[in-house]
Image: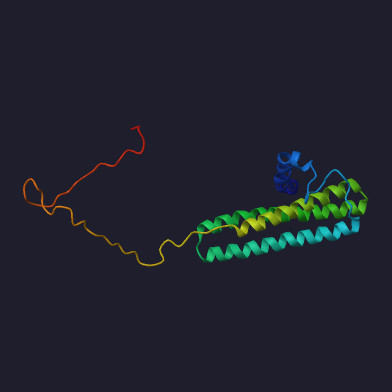
Length: 185
């Protein structure tokens, strides 16, 4: 059962690496080159891994507070958006905790390849959580549609005849069918 949960948690990361694999192969500013060894010492990687997990948990806490506020305001749109972002951050958090444990095990065994791989994945999870945290700030709720009581004002055109010119009685009602939106019926 625990291995099934790990696979479920790892699936978004694996799919992301398959989809964006060609982009990861091209080094660019702010990206992680997974194929090359890490320039960070093993002890420093363990410390950074702990700080990455803490940053992800901080993001989750912040988004959770935003979600609580949206629920108190009964803002369904914002609640839905923030709930989605929080769920994704929590998946990243659980995965980061698992990866941090695997990183520390790899450091203890002296497995450089696995250590570098786990550290790279942790870095990607941290970046993803930062993006989700920023996206949570962009969640827009429902606008207040009724700031006050609605009042309707109308005026009658004085050029409208008060009586039917044909009979001299009653009010004239002119019904004009609406124009078609397109040439098709």
